Length: 278
Image: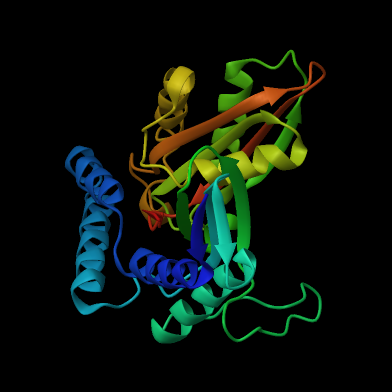
C-alpha cells in the first residue's frame, strides 16, 4: 500500500487547471497548423493564423487562451493500492480547483443551483469521474470545458439496426445545427455504447486524449466522420471553408442488445487537457 496525502492532489489539480488554461496542447497546435496549410478559403486561413497567435500570446504572457475558462472536469485513475490521508479525495480536488481559479485569474463560471443561478465564486464544485485501476499511482486529467461548445452537444439512442452511415449523419447534423456557436474549428468527442448516461461520459473522456490518437477499431469511422464534417462548409468560426473540425476522438463500451447509444460532445479549438501521474 502507498500512502498519499491529499495535499498532493490539491497541488497537482491547481497546476493542471492553470496550465491547461494558459497553454494550448501541442496536439491541437499541430492540427491548427496542418489545417491552415490545407485551407483554401483565405478568410478561414487568416483566422487560423490569429488562433495560433492567440495561443502563443497566452503561453508567453501567462494568461488564459479564452475568456471562458470552463467548468472543471477531472478524470482520476486511482490505483487500488493507494490510501489517501489527510482528508477526502473529492474535497482535495475541489480545493485545487478553488486555488487554480483564484490564483490563476481564471473566470469563475459555476452557479450553485441550475435554477437560482447564484455563482459559487470559485468555480467549484468540479465534475469528477473516478476509476479504480491496478497499482499504487494516481493519474489526474484536467479538462476545463467551455460551454459555448458544450451547449451544442447531443445524444441519440439508436436502435441496433443503425449503421455507421446513420452515426456519421447524426454527427454531421449535430455540427451543422451548431454552426458557428461552438467557435469552430471544433474537436469532436464521440461515445459509443454503454447506457444513455455513460455514452455521454465516454464522449467527454474522448476529449481528454490527443486528437486522433487511440481510436482503435474505430479509427476508420473517426476519419470518415471528420471528412464528412469538413465537407459541411461551416468552416472556421462558422464563416466557411474546409476546416470545420480538427479531429474526431471515439471512446466505446459494450452495450445492451436492444440499443446503440451515441453521444457527441463538441469542443472548440481550445480543447484543453492536462495530465499528471503521482
